[in-house]
Length: 410
Image (tube, rainbow, N blue to C red; front, side, top):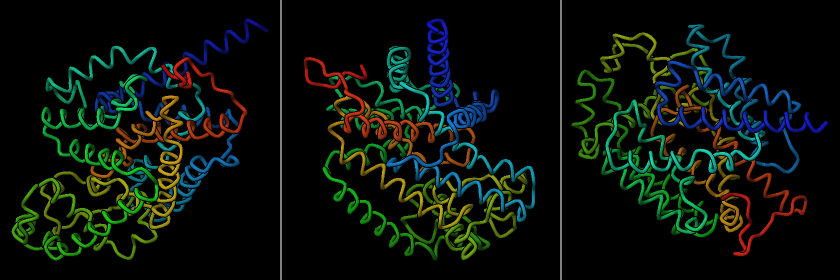
């Protein structure tokens, strides 16, 4: 019996180390480890296996984040199933289905125990030196993915400095901006500045609502100019329509893509276009020269905002579920922030917030190179919420060290 317990413990530790190693390698160089070794698919399959082994429990009593995630996954499965009748390219049907099957990584992170401890004890020293060096010495994309690797930042902060984690994360992203000139680093720093200044979930929610209202007003004002993408002048006509659209070309292209989804695909986008169809139709009215050379791009080209892209594929219901899911995550964070600071699990929330910013302005959930990173971190957040419920409820009594901090994570 003792040998069996030791063997199971050894296998558990090996599984944890392997999962974390895959996660780190995929984040550091996703184009290599996904394109060459299919890490996203391996992690998704591992999530499916562990989910089946744990009894395929879709809903757990009192676990709001877990339950909403399962609801979103089930809805995605339903949309994927019915999309088969509407798809016009079977290969692209399977390819765009990455949005759904990558969600299984959530269950991998949720059910494997003590991933944070393994990460901190085994990988943090080397990864910390590597990330710190790469943040000030510009490395090629092959060696260091300067955007996605930002999700490691919270894990590199020791327990003694966790109370300064918000300004430290802001500082790290500002350094990344000066090193790699990526505007997404500034946006990440701005978001953490918001977290630093607001103290309650209600204040945070008001701030987010005000931001979205302001963005909606600006988007409507720019809409006539964005519509010029369908004119003879194409993107040049769009840029000439407003000084605002001349500030940054990459942002302008994002606004064009979002306009295509919100306006040109209305009202089909309300119920979703499904999988295996063209989100951006391949016609001569859309002035994106590369599309004339690549037939598959109208199927797989992302809107550089995964949430808007999911809206296009899965409809308004998917966005409602995601809003509920994020509301649950942020409510958990603000209501129990002191608790998570004490035991170190607040790192999971910060990492998930970072990848959320990336997801808002980049191709993440619809791409096999990045999708599993998002769902993995959400799985860690859901598990942290479940552990918080158990510990506060008295099922688990956390040990407290001499400094008064819960001694779970180093």
